[in-house]
Image (tube, rainbow, N blue to C red):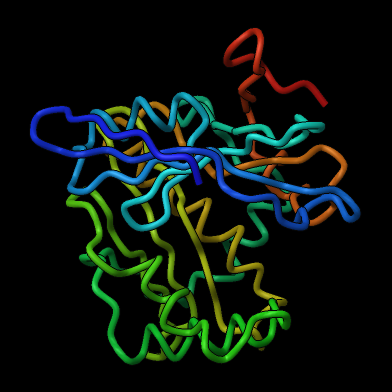
Amino acid sequence: MTVENGSEEGVVVRGGIGPEQPCPYRPGLLWRNEIILPEGDLGAEVHELLFDLGFRRSGQAFFRPACADCRSCRSLRIATPAFRRSKSQRRVWNRNQDLAVEVAELRADEEMLALLFRYLEARHRGWIEHERDEIAGSLFDDPPANARALLLRLEGRLVGVGIVSLTPNLLSSDYFYFEPDLGERSLGTFSMLWEIDWARRDRRRWYHPGFWVADCPAMSYKARLRPAQILDPDRGWIALVR
């Protein structure tokens, strides 16, 4: 990776373009990321600027697609004051009212890690045993001060974990994983609905659920959150019309 060094308020920032890898969203294509690796916490205001520029966060690192031949990945954001649940989203919401929801500091414990490894084994079968520490570290090690964990419990048992970033004007959903045997509950959708309500209660205008690819069926649920905007490389944030 090409690296450049700089400093802003005592924080050293490294960055560059990562290597090409198989695309997880469009089979047969290659994917690569532009990466920012700060050595220290940039702070919530800078995080917000990066989110508005289409970056996502993983641990202390920020990344966004920088593919040579494809521009399908678009950052998505939802206007929280205007959001209204659809009929199907109301069903998901009602189905999960027996869950206890807790917001906590982002610090992994054995219960959270055990659930993560069950989820990865069930949903991402290409992962390798020796990557356990690397994956967990990328999510939980040295989190920035504005990171939080959303914990979902069913009768006391941890069944879902959302990792989010809070900035003055937005809430970013950085990662979510859940109990593989509870797929019928649509816990990912429920967590997004809960996070949108959370952002609205705290008067945060935007909710960022991550990248969206129009022709990727696995991502279609994100576009059902309305009203939504996508980040166009040439025009900035524009309304998503589908």
